[in-house]
Length: 117
Image (cartoon, rainbow, N blue to C red; front, side, top):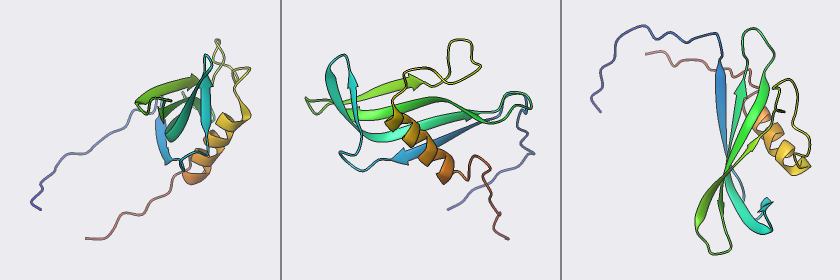
C-alpha cells in the first residue's frame, strides 16, 4: 500500500461529536413504527458535547429490514424539543442500545494509543 499524508489536522472544540456504530444480533431488537415491525441489524448513536457541556446522546439511527425484507433507515431523536433533556416516550430498549454504544466507546472517553512507527 502506497500512502502519503501531511498536515496538522485540527478538530473544532465548539461542538465535538462522536458517532458509535453497533452491529446488532439478528432479531434482538424489533422496532415498530405505525404498526409495522422492522428488525434492526445496525445502530449508529450520535453523542455530542456542545461547548464544555457533558456528553449527551442526541440521536440514534437504525438500519433495519421490514416485513418485505427490504432495508430501511429509521432515526430517533433522543433529546426533547428544547434540547435540554431526554425526549419523553423513547422506549427502554432504545436507551439500552445507547448504553451499549456508550460502553463500547468507553463512555465516550475513547482512549487510543498510536502505534509507534
